[in-house]
Image 1 (cartoon, rainbow, N blue to C red):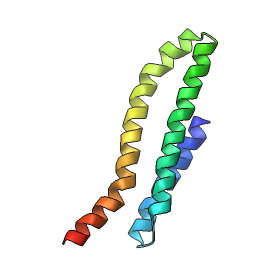
Image 2 (image 1 turned 135 degrees about the horizontal axis):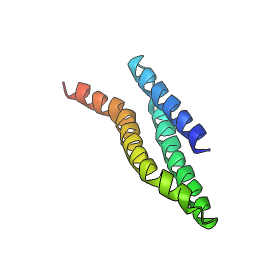
Image 3 (image 1 turned 45 degrees about the vertical axis):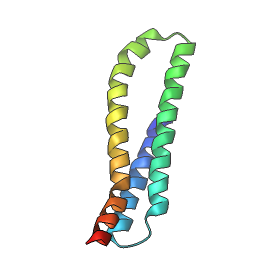
Length: 95
């Protein structure tokens, strides 16, 4: 599930940037991108929780350390890309 939500988050972020680039209202796409990013994180956490419940320690030891780094990096990238249009809009208003 986290993979599907992550792909939707990427698509929504791309739509956000495209809509900003074409001058259309991008705020709904931005909200969707950030929302699906949050849902992706929750789905990943849920998967790890399931592994803990069944005591699948090997899955936890193999996946969680790498997954933690990837989730941090991808979340920061998602937030940065989704708020870029707002920052660019503020910058253009100041000039």
